[in-house]
Amino acid sequence: MEAAKQTGRTVLCAAGGVAANSVIREDLRRACEAADIRLYLPPLKLCGDNGAMIGAQGYYEYLAGHTAGMELNAYATRDIAD
Image: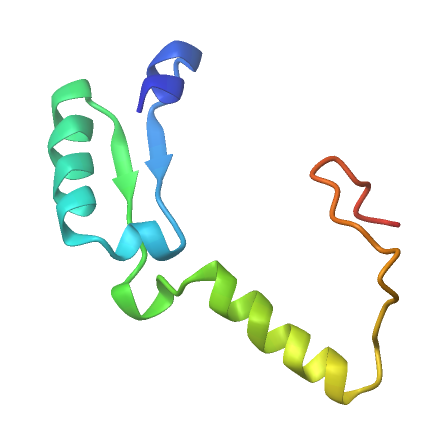
């Protein structure tokens, strides 16, 4: 919400598992209405937990034989093409 205000944005979209939280959805509705910001919320059936989706994809990658050694590390700033 603050980022939208600071950048002059008039549209806000919430997604992922956090967008399934009914309290957060209602708070966002109220705050956006008060700030004259248009809010987009996906249907609850599309607000899945991203961790669960990543885990499911990892399962299928493993079944396909796509594995990595223990030297592989997670980098928050790693280029997606790597």
